[in-house]
Figure 1 (cartoon, helix red, strand yellow):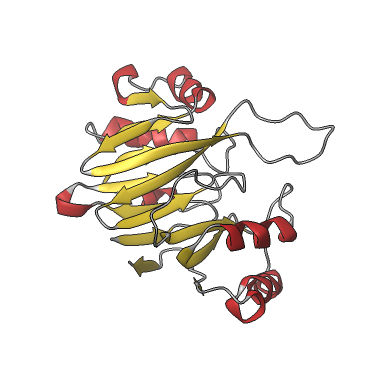
Figure 2: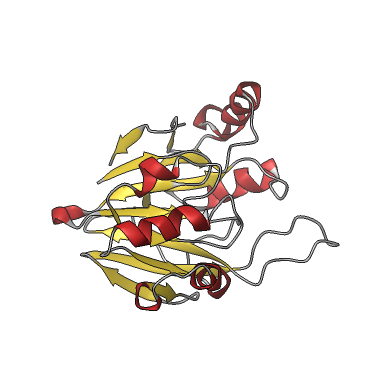
Length: 226
């Protein structure tokens, strides 16, 4: 399995046996052109623009007629209001299990992380546990909600949000410690400077936390073979 980072919260996964490419959260802070190129499966965690560039996804649906999108109701409504074909956009909710091109996707979560008690939360933020035979990747969207069930040997890749108005480093550390994974990849990082990345890596790296994972920062366009 190959995972590619496309900036901020967007990653793509090359599906096995020629199943195409799966993309999660192609938002406005990401390289959506590269991320969506050839993508047959698009997963959206919630409708914030940095996770859903609706114009880019609509163009993709128009140019690639076998592409489908899954997401919570608010994200699907955004696409439908822009003219997305109803038969190729699909609503998901926590607890759903999708079988797509030989890949199982378990939908979890439900709540966006709190920014502030006076700021209303989104109606829905879902998480995605993407499982191909023998491999697993987890994207939490804008949350630190852990997956409900994991294989005995944990995940191959845990994607950890590291910056944003709702992010607390202590919660990122607890999330990283709580979810066993071979590799931890920081995401949701567009607001960070290089100094911020360096400081974050010091706190999340195994040298400080004593975990068994490898902390691996990817640059936009860089891939990781699992």
